[in-house]
Length: 122
Image 1 (cartoon, rainbow, N blue to C red):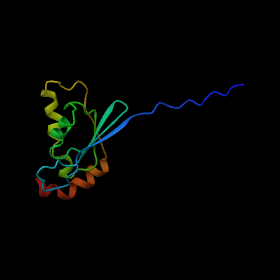
Image 2 (image 1 turned 45 degrees about the vertical axis):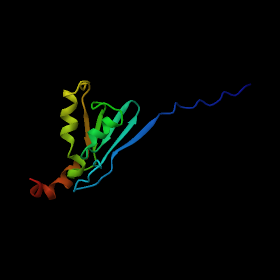
Image 3 (image 1 turned 60 degrees about the vertical axis):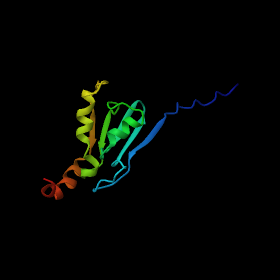
Image 4 (image 1 turned 120 degrees about the vertical axis):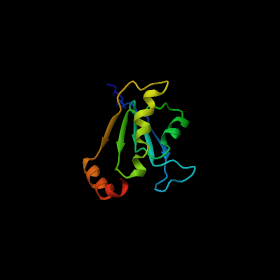
């Protein structure tokens, strides 16, 4: 009797692109703020939306509306400053977003990170 070779699961390709690694404030000339794109299983996850990430996304060969899920690690300004660019610009772009942008994050971080500095930033 011949043994059947064990079937290997299909390997899933995962790609990580560092769109920006500059922590702040302040902003650093020539460096984009914190933002990481992870592509896996047909989804494109954006972790944080630091200053200038959209330009880096387009320079990397992706469309502005390619991000399918957004994850905010915490609410410090250097992680969220370009959220309006992500939410508003792709709808007016030639490619025009066709799927909703799903946003994920921690309610605990939203409460704990924003509260101490709200009075300073407003």
